[in-house]
Length: 141
Image (cartoon, rainbow, N blue to C red; front, side, top):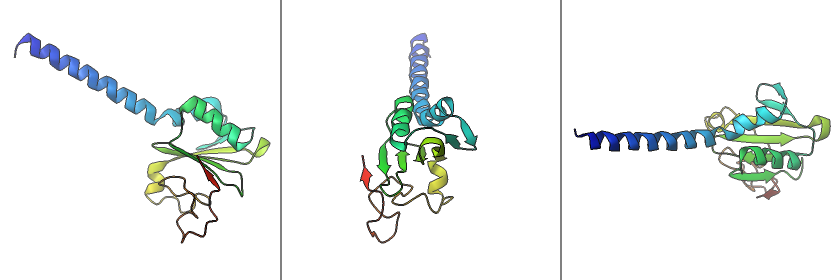
């Protein structure tokens, strides 16, 4: 091979490395942002001290916009769906908690119940996979 071909191959490899780095870093943004900005309670659960909507806004400021966002009107819980994670924010004030779960674990059947109106695929205005009684999440952004 001529030296020019080595140069082209090196440039292609460098571009591929940059693309992979960008894609990889966006996948873990929420998994990194929550532990950096909230105190760990246990495992993938973190303490928060505000209402779920305000906490969800703060998480999106640090981790980027979620692919979808849903609020359960009955409980006030907020669900954020990212590419590889689902974030559930429940309670308010001193009882506020953030749960960050790997979407792969949910899709493999590790979780049977995530909360009303929330399926592993995405937050939706449904009853969580039942016949569609309409008692699910009240609002979806």
